[in-house]
Image 1: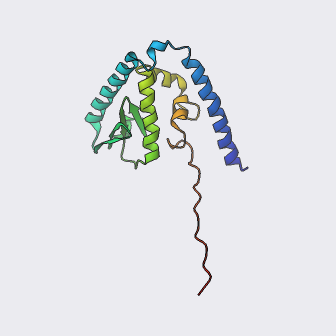
Image 2 (image 1 turned 135 degrees about the vertical axis):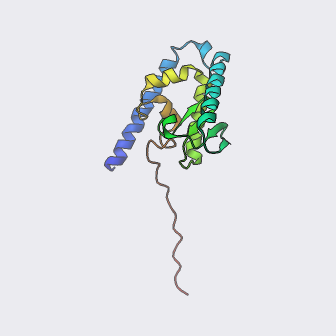
Image 3 (image 1 turned 180 degrees about the vertical axis):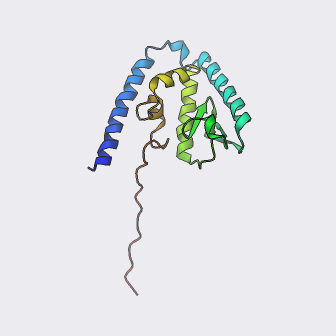
Length: 163
């Protein structure tokens, strides 16, 4: 196993433990706050904030993908990293988006639905390092472009003998 593969294997092993710790932490949260009408209000508030922020700064198209409102063409100072999910809105710049990134962001939308307005606070406590942040791990480190995606095997066609 190469060093890079070993490092990625270790990251995935650590990630599994971080997710387990997050699940244990969730059990300490009052159940009425999770996936509840209260959480739904927090999600709707987050979506409203995302819509306002996106409407103010987006210079690109507003699209609908994976249940998200995607605001393109945002100035880089208006969002962190490659983009940010606020409620049901994904705010991002002009970078090319593929289906896997949108799938990653759709998981963040589901996290908003689960935790509501608690999500930004819980995310802050989870830390800025995406490799150790349970919300980024749950959304998929490869899909979120935090780790290289596994190389896809390209099948070559069999060589034909000359005729």
